[in-house]
Length: 453
Image (tube, helix red, strand yellow):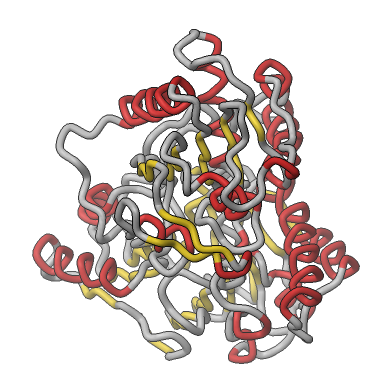
């Protein structure tokens, strides 16, 4: 098998992988790097000859995995794009949001190449999508050769898939982004338990050791308790969250706590893409048995849009409330970033992080601050004292490192390729896999280089 990591920067970014299996040429995912802008944020598609691919495969609909898809599909119009049914239903909406963000960034940040694609290209890409059911193998032929593709549910987010490729009795399994724990809205990953020849695995949480006696449900209980304490002392609670998947799960959690009267009654504010996606989740839930979500919980929680006039930097609203806002990492120019600027100086308030936060993102930098440090909201030209409570809850949408290590041990691959992780995370996996599977070749690929596995 030929392997090229097309993510120019490596780490977690513009996720995209080129594979050759015999005569079959494939790309898995086509993301945009969340910390880069313009053409620098895209994968190295120029390494792949135009109109040469047989298939494009998508693991899920987060933009670090599909944000460059229209750029790839216009160079590979002949290639069907395989994805799960929920990903088919979500992908175009996510790309339209990306297009809108790029249009705004062109104006605000003077990025001349934005937007990288237009609405027409998004529509063309949508027509190339071919949904396939989980656990249902699909065969593709080229001459006398056969490639079998099977999708397996990967947890993480609605539609997320691990992908099995079978060629000449050789099995290659790609985890994509994976969460083994069940959520209210989505069951955890259900991966194959038979041996494979090659495992291509995410490594996101390679530096995160699981706490002893960790209990995900207990973590949610502690989040609800932190919200209640904040409201009781007259403060506001900001929960920064990813719009796709995490926001809907948190809404479901707040709804359950509200229904059981374990959540203090208070206004709940939210807005934007995450709320819009609730309609999509409701539709997926009605048409499939793959997720569990109803948009009616928004009405029952009385979720409403915030009053931005009361949320200037340093200006905490008088009424205690919950603000459930994207982005999850307080990225500049997002609602969570602006609301954090309003709340951070007031000791009655709390900011509760519930997922992965890049150390270089504003959220990661805030987590590294100490109480009463100064924190700069650069794009708002505002510096705030860190007086609010900054809390972190272990509710990531990614599997723990020991779970992925156990997966590798159970699958007994002859080769393992490490992806979707920062250098320290990959180093941990490299060291541990050498101990657990000493006969297995472990590859931490350099971007743009070609490997034969």
